Image (cartoon, rainbow, N blue to C red; front, side, top):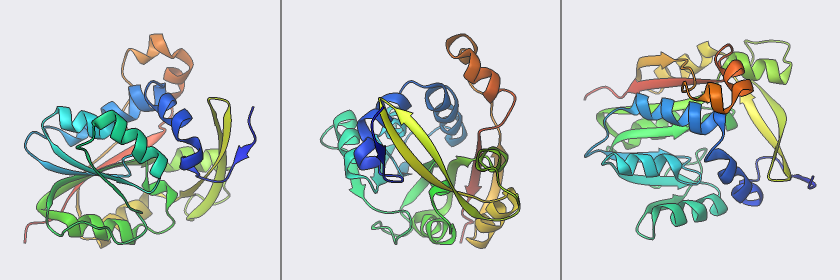
Length: 237
């Protein structure tokens, strides 16, 4: 086992993380199909992939006919995305916690996969998502299920917003992950305060084939929610 890496240092962890993400039960057979299903038909849409990582979601969105722009704060993850998507891919280095370098009222859809739980404050990213979306545009995102991360953290107060650390080991590398737990009510309030109308909140099950491929993961994911998924819409002017 390698020495621990600094918290959330995806530049040091990129290759191992991406290789695991491409095929594991949690991402390939649970999160990715669920969020893409929630996104629906993307043919002809301008889509912003917020926190695009290695580009697996962007690849699927482009295959569905979308024009995709992706951004991530990790240069190493963006390098993987460029190799996956090709030299012509629209990929930008940007931070979810900062103002985004994209025009207002431009995108039909913002998709953000498992990114918001890294942030204490959701007001800035949700405000930016609302700004870059066209009137009537949609936001689809996944994040840690609040009951799952509260259990992992061993927290004392579910209703608090608090940071906690976890450790991942992938490809022989150990990485400290720092996340922010917030209750479901705080998630809903943040969306409403950013001006979004919530369409759907889902707690999907993994794909059926997970039962044979990853029986232990399937048992866990089909009995305890791991992630939670939101679809929200920016109102028409």
